[in-house]
Length: 259
Image 1: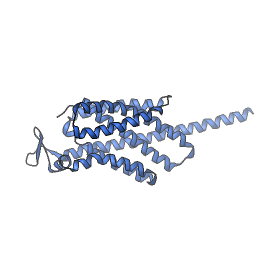
Image 2: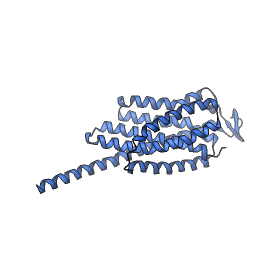
Image 3: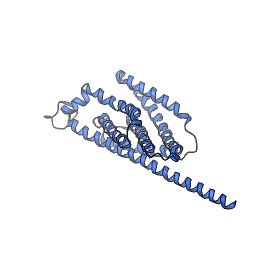
Image 4: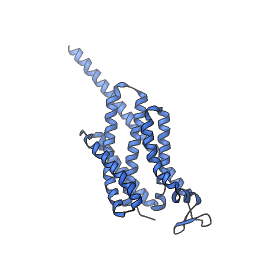
């Protein structure tokens, strides 16, 4: 009997160790995919803003600051009706991705995520026209530190954060609608309120999404469906990527120094 209990304990310990190792590998994949997405977004935003502006008056079509001009390309993407397509394209893509994820292969889903990250870079590239490079870098570092702390909390806490998920999602929907309305109202007071609420919502979502990724893996790890786990890692990376990008953009309204 004692031998049987020992064998069962050892077997249970081995299964736990295997699941723990799998969880670490899964989370590493999630953060790795997210990091690649962030690099693609930053590179696309920087490259596109460079193509959109010039210091040569003969190549510029509109002055945006002392010594800086929009090129014809910049005029097209920032000052023509195309800007609305660019602005809302990431939102359309993320809804389409969520709807198609079950029909895509892991490779196709990963490629779509990278394409989405590049499109997001195009969508937010105008920050390089509005804010100084120093303030963008500083805000990015502040966001990275805050994100790391919040994600670590979500991963390690024993508290169940699922209860606040519904509240956060409802807040996110309200925030999205308010942001769309303020595009047309252009109210500075409303923009400030949206930024404050946005930082709080995406701070909460960072912790909640991290715990959700961990919990989902633990619930399905026994099945060993590698196809499903691969897609789950990509969706997890997308969720954390969106948390980071949105928290960064809202913080930039507070911390960014305008050109």
